[in-house]
Amino acid sequence: MADSFGKLFRVTIFGESHSKAIGAVIDGVPSGLELDLDEIEKEMRRRAPGQNNLSTPRKEADLPNIVSGFFEGKATGTPLCAIIENTNTRSKDYEPDLLRPAHADYTGKIRYNGFNDYRGGGHFSGRLTAPLVFAGAIAKQYLAKEGIKICAHLSSIGNICDDVFDMCSIEEDIINAINSHELPVINENVIEKMKETILAAKADGDSVGGTIECAIIGAKAGLGSPFFESVESRMAAMMFSVPAVKGIEFGAGFDISKMRGSIANDSFCIASDKILTKTNNNGGINGGITNGMPIVFKTAIKPTPSISLEQDTINIKEMTDCKMSVHGRHDPCIAHRAVCVIEAAAAIVMADLVLEAKTYGR
Image 1 (cartoon, rainbow, N blue to C red):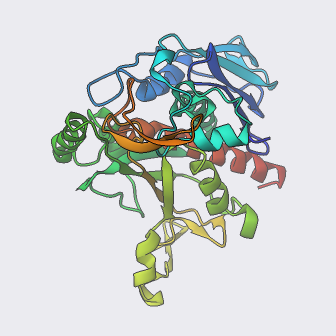
Image 2: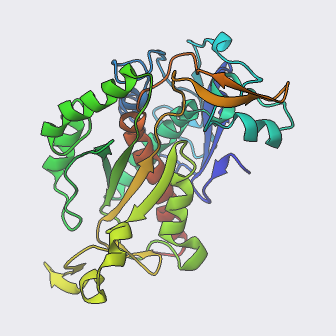
């Protein structure tokens, strides 16, 4: 199914940006798993629009209404379904015949023979990351019981860069500090420069992109499989399912190509009776399988394609070249709101991997 991901922890998302509601169905949530609804709502608020002048003014409560698979505070083990209402749409801002550059207007029209809902991007919209965050919030609660924690931060906005994780050791106080800042960064001294970069693009009627670094801590060695079912393969497939993600790299990423093998190789060592590596250039994965070190990867988030600057396009009905400006309420930068989405997407993959390992007796 095109809108489903996972094997044992399987997530299906549905809805469109301007439909009555969006939502998710999750198969494989272990029966008896106690769910903290306050924690789920906290995760949803991290992604929610309309919170400041750095994001779209469209305001949505994004409160998930769980309609099945949840009883007396715990998952039942049957499909868990949640619906999130769309309450603040302005469909008049969208013209079906003008193809917005870098959007899915053209490809969606071709793929669905012209029957796609074009309003607000329809099913292609970043709005659909709300049910993804919901599913990820549940996955995080399951993973916490397995000793796994996931944390991400804005590693850059435009050319303003944050500090990077220590890929061998990511401390709890670093994670707590990231989540306490106005923007999710390690070095709070870059926050004002990042804000200035976003607001400058907004003032110009333009947008700006960024990168997000994510770390998965506490995953045991042995998760995943080689080749087509590698941890990198599955993680990358999920990350490219998040709208606006245009690239991913693990560990040292592209920079590993500049190293010699003697530097790139992560030498093994024994510390506190545990097998570790002295460096983590491979991002906690060898042969597609976790080696027990933090899994670290970085994603590239493109600039928001909806900008008010005049751009070249076509009128597909009249088959003529024309100019257009995108109207409506849009984020000048989506990277800072995408941090919790990347965490959620990673959590879904990891929950699936952990459940899979349990079926193999690991």
